[in-house]
Image: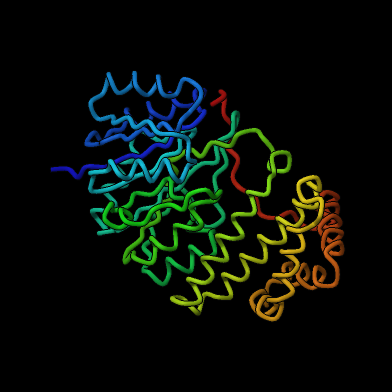
Length: 346
Protein backbone atom coordinates (compact mmCIF):
# COMPACT_ATOMS: atom_id res chain seq x y z
CA UNK A 1 0.00 0.00 0.00
CA UNK A 2 1.23 3.48 -0.84
CA UNK A 3 2.36 5.62 2.10
CA UNK A 4 -0.07 8.26 3.30
CA UNK A 5 1.17 11.83 2.84
CA UNK A 6 -0.19 14.61 5.05
CA UNK A 7 -0.18 18.07 3.48
CA UNK A 8 -0.44 20.89 6.02
CA UNK A 9 -1.59 24.29 4.74
CA UNK A 10 -1.82 27.23 7.21
CA UNK A 11 -4.29 29.83 5.91
CA UNK A 12 -4.67 33.52 6.70
CA UNK A 13 -5.97 36.36 4.50
CA UNK A 14 -5.26 34.67 1.18
CA UNK A 15 -8.69 34.49 -0.46
CA UNK A 16 -7.07 35.83 -3.65
CA UNK A 17 -4.65 32.88 -3.84
CA UNK A 18 -6.22 30.00 -1.91
CA UNK A 19 -7.99 28.34 -4.85
CA UNK A 20 -4.73 28.04 -6.80
CA UNK A 21 -2.98 26.49 -3.81
CA UNK A 22 -5.65 23.96 -2.86
CA UNK A 23 -6.39 22.88 -6.43
CA UNK A 24 -2.69 22.22 -7.07
CA UNK A 25 -2.79 19.78 -4.15
CA UNK A 26 -6.08 18.14 -5.10
CA UNK A 27 -4.81 17.57 -8.67
CA UNK A 28 -1.72 15.66 -7.56
CA UNK A 29 -0.93 12.47 -9.47
CA UNK A 30 -0.30 10.90 -6.05
CA UNK A 31 -3.73 10.43 -4.53
CA UNK A 32 -3.11 8.88 -1.09
CA UNK A 33 -3.24 12.20 0.73
CA UNK A 34 -4.77 13.80 3.76
CA UNK A 35 -4.98 17.55 3.28
CA UNK A 36 -5.11 19.56 6.49
CA UNK A 37 -6.33 23.12 5.91
CA UNK A 38 -5.85 25.28 9.01
CA UNK A 39 -7.89 28.48 9.06
CA UNK A 40 -5.84 30.70 11.36
CA UNK A 41 -8.72 33.04 12.22
CA UNK A 42 -8.69 34.56 8.75
CA UNK A 43 -11.03 37.61 8.62
CA UNK A 44 -11.85 37.16 4.91
CA UNK A 45 -13.80 34.33 3.21
CA UNK A 46 -11.03 31.72 3.49
CA UNK A 47 -12.91 29.77 6.17
CA UNK A 48 -15.95 29.44 3.92
CA UNK A 49 -13.85 28.56 0.87
CA UNK A 50 -12.00 25.70 2.54
CA UNK A 51 -15.27 24.41 3.99
CA UNK A 52 -16.68 24.15 0.48
CA UNK A 53 -13.61 22.24 -0.68
CA UNK A 54 -13.98 19.81 2.24
CA UNK A 55 -17.54 19.01 1.20
CA UNK A 56 -16.28 17.96 -2.24
CA UNK A 57 -13.21 15.92 -1.28
CA UNK A 58 -13.08 13.46 1.63
CA UNK A 59 -9.27 13.80 1.89
CA UNK A 60 -9.60 17.32 3.28
CA UNK A 61 -9.64 18.05 7.00
CA UNK A 62 -10.59 21.60 7.97
CA UNK A 63 -9.39 23.09 11.24
CA UNK A 64 -10.59 26.49 12.48
CA UNK A 65 -8.70 28.33 15.22
CA UNK A 66 -8.12 31.79 16.61
CA UNK A 67 -5.37 33.75 14.89
CA UNK A 68 -1.99 32.83 16.32
CA UNK A 69 0.40 33.21 13.41
CA UNK A 70 2.02 30.82 10.96
CA UNK A 71 3.86 28.76 13.58
CA UNK A 72 0.75 28.26 15.68
CA UNK A 73 -1.25 27.23 12.61
CA UNK A 74 1.37 24.69 11.53
CA UNK A 75 1.54 23.29 15.06
CA UNK A 76 -2.25 22.94 15.15
CA UNK A 77 -2.18 21.20 11.79
CA UNK A 78 0.41 18.72 13.03
CA UNK A 79 -2.03 17.61 15.73
CA UNK A 80 -4.20 16.16 12.96
CA UNK A 81 -1.42 14.53 10.93
CA UNK A 82 -1.66 10.74 10.59
CA UNK A 83 0.46 10.27 7.45
CA UNK A 84 3.77 8.51 7.10
CA UNK A 85 5.13 11.66 5.47
CA UNK A 86 4.38 15.36 5.91
CA UNK A 87 4.62 18.22 3.43
CA UNK A 88 4.09 21.89 4.28
CA UNK A 89 2.64 24.18 1.62
CA UNK A 90 2.10 27.88 2.28
CA UNK A 91 -1.31 29.09 1.19
CA UNK A 92 -0.19 31.65 -1.39
CA UNK A 93 2.14 29.11 -3.06
CA UNK A 94 1.34 26.14 -5.30
CA UNK A 95 2.93 22.90 -6.47
CA UNK A 96 3.35 20.90 -9.69
CA UNK A 97 0.90 18.02 -10.27
CA UNK A 98 3.60 15.36 -9.94
CA UNK A 99 5.53 16.86 -7.05
CA UNK A 100 4.40 14.53 -4.28
CA UNK A 101 4.64 11.42 -6.44
CA UNK A 102 8.19 12.33 -7.37
CA UNK A 103 9.28 13.11 -3.80
CA UNK A 104 7.78 9.89 -2.44
CA UNK A 105 9.57 7.81 -5.08
CA UNK A 106 12.89 9.49 -4.27
CA UNK A 107 12.37 8.98 -0.55
CA UNK A 108 11.74 5.27 -1.12
CA UNK A 109 14.58 4.82 -3.61
CA UNK A 110 17.18 6.51 -1.41
CA UNK A 111 15.68 5.67 1.99
CA UNK A 112 15.72 9.39 2.70
CA UNK A 113 14.48 11.02 5.87
CA UNK A 114 13.87 14.30 4.02
CA UNK A 115 13.61 15.14 0.33
CA UNK A 116 13.97 18.77 -0.73
CA UNK A 117 12.37 19.93 -3.96
CA UNK A 118 13.85 22.71 -6.06
CA UNK A 119 11.54 25.69 -6.46
CA UNK A 120 10.76 28.77 -8.47
CA UNK A 121 10.53 32.28 -7.08
CA UNK A 122 7.18 33.05 -8.71
CA UNK A 123 6.28 36.61 -9.69
CA UNK A 124 3.17 37.73 -11.53
CA UNK A 125 4.85 37.76 -14.95
CA UNK A 126 8.03 35.73 -14.52
CA UNK A 127 9.80 32.99 -12.58
CA UNK A 128 13.31 32.91 -11.15
CA UNK A 129 15.29 29.69 -10.74
CA UNK A 130 18.52 29.42 -8.78
CA UNK A 131 20.88 27.73 -11.21
CA UNK A 132 24.12 28.84 -9.53
CA UNK A 133 24.90 25.36 -8.26
CA UNK A 134 22.83 22.88 -10.25
CA UNK A 135 20.81 22.70 -13.44
CA UNK A 136 17.28 21.35 -13.49
CA UNK A 137 18.43 18.14 -15.22
CA UNK A 138 21.13 17.23 -12.70
CA UNK A 139 20.56 13.99 -10.74
CA UNK A 140 19.59 14.19 -7.05
CA UNK A 141 22.37 14.61 -4.51
CA UNK A 142 22.60 12.77 -1.20
CA UNK A 143 23.84 14.43 1.96
CA UNK A 144 24.78 12.76 5.22
CA UNK A 145 24.18 14.56 8.50
CA UNK A 146 27.48 16.43 8.58
CA UNK A 147 27.15 17.59 4.97
CA UNK A 148 23.52 18.55 5.54
CA UNK A 149 24.22 20.71 8.57
CA UNK A 150 27.01 22.51 6.72
CA UNK A 151 24.66 23.32 3.84
CA UNK A 152 21.82 24.25 6.18
CA UNK A 153 23.96 26.77 8.05
CA UNK A 154 25.09 28.32 4.76
CA UNK A 155 21.46 28.39 3.51
CA UNK A 156 22.43 28.15 -0.13
CA UNK A 157 21.94 24.60 -1.45
CA UNK A 158 19.80 23.61 1.55
CA UNK A 159 17.24 26.19 2.59
CA UNK A 160 15.84 26.73 6.08
CA UNK A 161 12.29 26.78 4.67
CA UNK A 162 9.93 24.16 6.06
CA UNK A 163 7.82 24.22 2.90
CA UNK A 164 8.72 22.25 -0.21
CA UNK A 165 10.29 19.35 1.68
CA UNK A 166 8.89 15.88 2.24
CA UNK A 167 9.57 14.85 5.85
CA UNK A 168 9.14 11.51 7.50
CA UNK A 169 6.45 12.45 9.99
CA UNK A 170 8.14 10.69 12.91
CA UNK A 171 11.10 13.03 12.43
CA UNK A 172 9.14 16.24 13.08
CA UNK A 173 6.07 15.22 15.06
CA UNK A 174 7.48 16.28 18.43
CA UNK A 175 9.35 19.43 17.31
CA UNK A 176 6.90 22.35 17.28
CA UNK A 177 7.51 25.65 15.52
CA UNK A 178 8.33 28.54 17.82
CA UNK A 179 5.29 30.75 18.20
CA UNK A 180 5.16 34.52 17.99
CA UNK A 181 8.21 35.02 15.76
CA UNK A 182 8.87 35.78 12.12
CA UNK A 183 11.30 33.53 10.25
CA UNK A 184 10.06 30.65 12.38
CA UNK A 185 11.81 28.11 10.12
CA UNK A 186 15.24 29.40 11.24
CA UNK A 187 14.38 28.48 14.85
CA UNK A 188 13.12 25.04 13.76
CA UNK A 189 15.08 23.58 10.86
CA UNK A 190 18.36 22.78 12.64
CA UNK A 191 16.51 20.85 15.36
CA UNK A 192 14.94 18.65 12.69
CA UNK A 193 18.04 18.24 10.53
CA UNK A 194 20.07 17.18 13.56
CA UNK A 195 18.05 13.95 13.44
CA UNK A 196 18.50 13.29 9.73
CA UNK A 197 20.75 10.51 8.41
CA UNK A 198 19.98 10.81 4.70
CA UNK A 199 18.87 14.01 2.99
CA UNK A 200 18.18 14.23 -0.75
CA UNK A 201 18.11 17.40 -2.86
CA UNK A 202 16.29 17.28 -6.20
CA UNK A 203 16.82 19.92 -8.85
CA UNK A 204 13.65 19.89 -10.94
CA UNK A 205 11.58 22.80 -9.55
CA UNK A 206 8.18 21.54 -8.42
CA UNK A 207 7.24 24.23 -5.89
CA UNK A 208 6.19 27.80 -6.72
CA UNK A 209 7.19 30.25 -3.97
CA UNK A 210 5.00 33.27 -4.66
CA UNK A 211 6.63 36.68 -4.27
CA UNK A 212 4.16 39.41 -3.44
CA UNK A 213 4.82 42.87 -4.78
CA UNK A 214 5.24 44.57 -1.38
CA UNK A 215 8.75 45.90 -0.73
CA UNK A 216 10.64 44.69 2.35
CA UNK A 217 11.92 48.25 2.83
CA UNK A 218 8.41 49.68 2.76
CA UNK A 219 6.98 46.98 5.05
CA UNK A 220 9.97 46.60 7.35
CA UNK A 221 9.23 46.28 11.06
CA UNK A 222 11.12 45.40 14.22
CA UNK A 223 9.71 41.89 13.96
CA UNK A 224 12.03 41.31 11.00
CA UNK A 225 14.86 41.30 13.54
CA UNK A 226 13.58 37.93 14.76
CA UNK A 227 15.81 36.32 12.15
CA UNK A 228 18.90 37.55 14.02
CA UNK A 229 17.58 36.02 17.24
CA UNK A 230 16.92 32.78 15.36
CA UNK A 231 20.43 32.69 13.94
CA UNK A 232 21.95 33.37 17.37
CA UNK A 233 19.84 30.60 18.89
CA UNK A 234 20.97 28.25 16.14
CA UNK A 235 24.58 29.34 16.69
CA UNK A 236 24.43 28.12 20.29
CA UNK A 237 23.22 24.77 18.94
CA UNK A 238 26.03 24.71 16.37
CA UNK A 239 28.62 25.49 19.06
CA UNK A 240 27.39 22.51 21.07
CA UNK A 241 26.87 19.88 18.38
CA UNK A 242 28.74 21.06 15.24
CA UNK A 243 31.61 23.15 16.57
CA UNK A 244 33.52 22.97 13.29
CA UNK A 245 30.70 24.93 11.63
CA UNK A 246 30.96 27.93 13.96
CA UNK A 247 32.75 30.07 11.36
CA UNK A 248 30.03 29.43 8.78
CA UNK A 249 27.44 30.28 11.42
CA UNK A 250 29.22 33.50 12.43
CA UNK A 251 29.48 34.51 8.76
CA UNK A 252 25.73 34.20 8.24
CA UNK A 253 25.01 36.11 11.45
CA UNK A 254 27.34 38.94 10.41
CA UNK A 255 25.89 39.21 6.92
CA UNK A 256 22.35 39.27 8.33
CA UNK A 257 23.25 41.85 11.00
CA UNK A 258 24.75 44.19 8.39
CA UNK A 259 21.69 43.88 6.16
CA UNK A 260 19.29 44.65 9.00
CA UNK A 261 21.39 47.51 10.33
CA UNK A 262 21.06 49.15 6.91
CA UNK A 263 17.32 48.42 6.79
CA UNK A 264 16.92 50.04 10.20
CA UNK A 265 18.86 53.03 8.91
CA UNK A 266 16.48 53.28 5.95
CA UNK A 267 13.46 53.03 8.26
CA UNK A 268 14.53 55.49 10.95
CA UNK A 269 11.01 55.95 12.24
CA UNK A 270 10.81 52.48 13.76
CA UNK A 271 14.10 52.83 15.69
CA UNK A 272 14.10 56.51 16.60
CA UNK A 273 16.24 56.06 19.69
CA UNK A 274 18.65 53.77 17.84
CA UNK A 275 18.23 50.99 20.39
CA UNK A 276 18.15 48.17 17.87
CA UNK A 277 20.99 49.54 15.76
CA UNK A 278 23.05 49.80 18.95
CA UNK A 279 22.28 46.17 19.77
CA UNK A 280 23.62 45.10 16.40
CA UNK A 281 26.71 47.27 16.86
CA UNK A 282 27.29 45.86 20.35
CA UNK A 283 27.06 42.28 19.10
CA UNK A 284 29.51 42.89 16.26
CA UNK A 285 31.91 44.72 18.57
CA UNK A 286 31.74 42.00 21.24
CA UNK A 287 32.38 39.23 18.70
CA UNK A 288 34.74 41.08 16.37
CA UNK A 289 37.67 38.69 16.89
CA UNK A 290 35.55 35.64 16.12
CA UNK A 291 33.87 37.35 13.17
CA UNK A 292 37.11 38.51 11.52
CA UNK A 293 38.39 34.92 11.69
CA UNK A 294 35.10 33.56 10.37
CA UNK A 295 35.09 35.77 7.25
CA UNK A 296 38.77 35.25 6.41
CA UNK A 297 38.90 34.60 2.68
CA UNK A 298 35.67 36.50 2.06
CA UNK A 299 37.07 39.82 0.85
CA UNK A 300 33.69 41.56 0.64
CA UNK A 301 32.52 40.70 4.15
CA UNK A 302 35.97 41.35 5.62
CA UNK A 303 35.89 44.85 4.13
CA UNK A 304 32.38 45.49 5.41
CA UNK A 305 33.23 44.24 8.90
CA UNK A 306 36.32 46.43 9.22
CA UNK A 307 34.52 49.51 7.89
CA UNK A 308 31.54 48.86 10.16
CA UNK A 309 33.83 48.61 13.20
CA UNK A 310 35.39 51.98 12.36
CA UNK A 311 31.93 53.50 11.85
CA UNK A 312 28.72 51.96 10.42
CA UNK A 313 28.31 54.87 8.00
CA UNK A 314 31.59 53.93 6.34
CA UNK A 315 30.16 50.55 5.44
CA UNK A 316 26.94 52.12 4.16
CA UNK A 317 29.00 54.46 1.95
CA UNK A 318 31.02 51.48 0.71
CA UNK A 319 27.83 49.65 -0.29
CA UNK A 320 26.45 52.75 -2.00
CA UNK A 321 29.62 53.22 -4.06
CA UNK A 322 29.69 49.52 -4.92
CA UNK A 323 26.11 49.70 -6.15
CA UNK A 324 26.98 52.75 -8.26
CA UNK A 325 30.09 51.11 -9.74
CA UNK A 326 28.09 48.02 -10.66
CA UNK A 327 25.46 50.19 -12.32
CA UNK A 328 28.20 51.94 -14.30
CA UNK A 329 29.69 48.50 -15.09
CA UNK A 330 32.98 49.45 -13.45
CA UNK A 331 32.54 46.45 -11.15
CA UNK A 332 31.06 43.08 -12.20
CA UNK A 333 27.45 42.32 -11.30
CA UNK A 334 26.82 39.55 -8.75
CA UNK A 335 25.76 36.22 -10.21
CA UNK A 336 22.02 36.31 -10.77
CA UNK A 337 19.23 33.78 -11.12
CA UNK A 338 17.78 32.35 -14.31
CA UNK A 339 14.76 34.42 -15.38
CA UNK A 340 11.86 32.65 -17.11
CA UNK A 341 9.33 34.99 -18.73
CA UNK A 342 5.68 33.97 -18.61
CA UNK A 343 3.15 34.67 -21.32
CA UNK A 344 0.44 34.99 -18.67
CA UNK A 345 0.11 36.32 -15.14
CA UNK A 346 0.13 33.83 -12.29
